[in-house]
Length: 201
Image 1 (cartoon, rainbow, N blue to C red):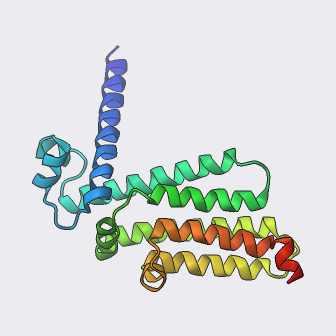
Image 2 (cartoon, rainbow, N blue to C red; image 1 turned 60 degrees about the vertical axis):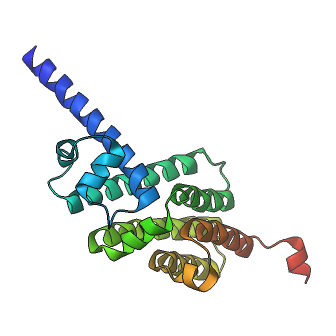
């Protein structure tokens, strides 16, 4: 019985921690985090600082936990979306990149600026970008198997995704990360499956 109670207690604690992380993610996506103190975050979350310190022992560690939770949640949702996509490689590419766009859409410009300013959070975003780029390259290869341009398109997609991560696309094209991923989806799909009109031109 004691073991069952211990397991139930641990399960409840885990659920409360996940719920708090979800709320923390909402706050930092909206407000950013660089200028916020633990007290500020606690006030936004309507909890005590002690509760927040239950996530991690410092502000930076709390924020890193929140950012990591956001990207893990986003990756899970993107993969679920991909699994539900019809068995059409081109549509899978579109679905995958549009799903990334949708996951990034709630994030404010302040969040992305803070994400880039902190080495630990920048590394989390970079790691997720690399994983997504590898997935897109794999999907492109599958969609255009035998096409000489497949490797090139996949390489370009990876380079553009890295440029999105570095903020270069927003600087040069005025597209935030979410809009840039949506535009990239259309660009790849059109390059691999040009319209009849384009073929006749």
